[in-house]
Image (tube, rainbow, N blue to C red; front, side, top):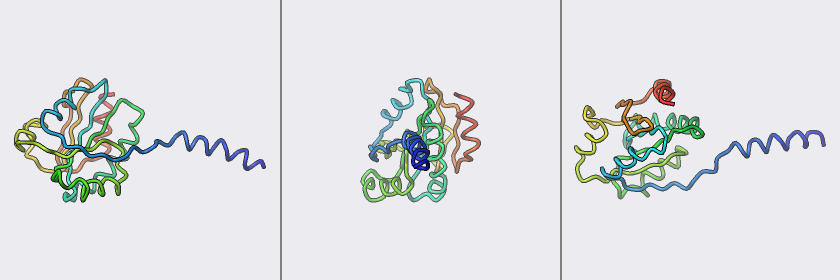
Amino acid sequence: MRKQILLFPMMFLLLIGCRTPSPLVVKPIDEQQFQQLVQQRAGKILVVNIWATWCAPCREEFPELVRLADFYHSKSVEFVGISVDFPDEISAKILPFLKANHANFANYVKAVSDDEEFINIINRKWSGALPATAVYDMEGKQRYFKFGKINPAVLKKQIDALL
């Protein structure tokens, strides 16, 4: 009986600490929609990761992004992923990848009319190499950009500096 009494509060704390996962939905995003996403910050920092299912470094770093998104979920930080796979690969490739990696943040698929324009909107110095990660402050100004696999400690430091 005593074990049951002690067990109930522990189970309650575990339950309230867990977030209910929202269903995975991947929507296309174009240049204008991306710019709106960056500008409509609602007082939140935005971390954007550009990735692809066929990109080995992207697949390697994705679990770190999931952990960081989970760490910052109660703070004013929003994580967003943008896949550069083809929009018709959402069901076949993108969603299975996101489910397998327990994605806990919004994801889109690039559906742009001009790849070069999209690259320049993200960062004019970016070649388009994957993965790429950008951090925007609460006003929508890019404060950090990295192409190549992220170092989670460095990304955390960049985010913490803006909080």
